[in-house]
View (cartoon, rainbow, N blue to C red):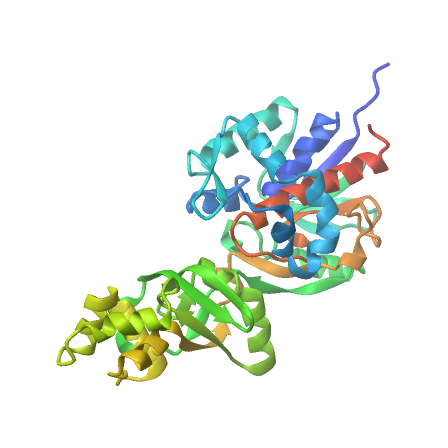
Length: 406
């Protein structure tokens, strides 16, 4: 007599949930993925608009340092599904990859839709059932999972559950953070969700806000405290966003929470010393306008010149050495982080002490947690997707151990 396959519910059809479903179905489980949206993988598709940064090519020591305080407990999960394994997985779905100039790894298609289509086809072949428009609301008195659907209330009783509902960023794509209240009521410790990888407010002048919103600052270096980051930033009507800002966002967020504001410094020409800049500026006729001297000597854009005025005042110094110093360090004060629903990701989530080594909820045996629901954060650059997929696979392995499935 053929044994009945263990039934596992995966709640959340993002990268972590789909990876958990793949590992579980590959081991012979009967897997059903529930998602409150009409289709799965919506945040993955959104990420694909920026090229779908899968992971990063840097050595593992600096790679893991990107996860900050969570690096210690994430290490074993990422060791079990490292960047090389992620690349092999993507290529197994027909998506060849390449390493960009920044060390980031992308599929050659530079979008998510081909990968997602191939992934969903693989899951179908493994027998995974996807049930959209199922909004999880918690457990009933019998311990069954409860869902609100267009056809009414539904309750199911699987042998195990993986929760992979994401954080609270971009709620229109599915992850609204409503699970935090549900788990809190069930006795699960949840660290309050906060925005991560988001922009910050700057009190721009009308001129800079109206003329330069949407313009990039390319090849700059931004310093906050002892950390200096090379990259790009984007001026918005509210302030600043972009990769170089996101890399500092956790420290900036914490500083604003503590002090009410945070001051960072922008080096507009990080590849040149102050003496080199001063010499080039000094070669320009002193009777020219400041903007023309800077444009001809250093190719400063109108945005960069106006940013200097925002930082140092309308009347910039005429002395070449003083001007070079201003260019090497333009201070800007950030007053607030942008709202969580506009963030790329979130910090906070299910506390580390609320799950065991298999990522199972201590307060709810048989229920496992993966992805952004867990309390970790990382900058953009491939680290978010890497940890989401790795914890999805880790939670699935935890389910298999609990169910004694080899």
